[in-house]
Image (cartoon, rainbow, N blue to C red; front, top):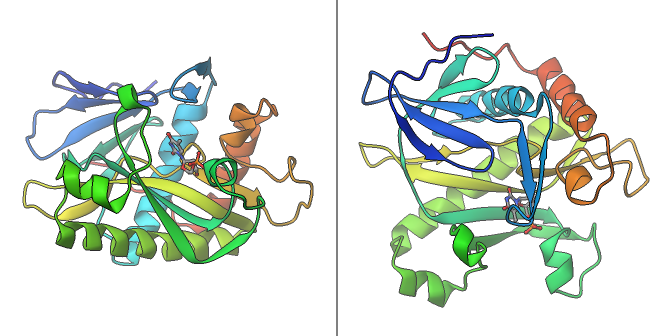
Length: 252
Ligand code: TMP
């Protein structure tokens, strides 16, 4: 077991991660937990090994995106379930990019699961657990005043670049990127960067080699829908992504 790199207090605890201060102002330590939640934490479980897998998958994806010029908060790994990142002021807007219809889109609109969406659909949600992360309209977002028009444009552009980068990588390993959620933040230098995580907790990934609508699912929908094999599915995603990416860097 690796020693904790957290040398300061707990700054924030979310459903799947904890963020700690370190002895440097410009570095925080993120611990990936084995906790899984769905439906705004109405459903909970501990999935042994999930934290380490999501940590490693996120590292590989952040490094891949970084190589494509996408700025991220990621600095490097520490042990198997810790990631060192730059501290950011998180924009309280969850950005969902959808390439195929699935999930809430299908329960809120008359559209069949798997319908291609081109260009991709971007949905914005207000990041507030107490309110249940509601879907935002442009007018509500403007009323909230949490981002300027220019920042919103930059967020949309970054989200589409992330989509292209991830789609390319997942496509290479036989995975269809159905949709995903990202969070963005501003660094101390006011640079907009990709933050949080990118993992099967935050993406829908379908195995392109499997036609069965349930068997092809390799993401958190296995947990949401009680399909079983959650950790195995995450392990498959890790194995495939790892197969085409360099070893993620260790933070020193
Ligand atoms: P949705 O279809 O439920 O709106 O989800 C869209 C995508 O966002 C899907 O890949 C799962 C991801 N997501 C999260 O990462 N966190 C969340 O809290 C929710 C609701 C969705």
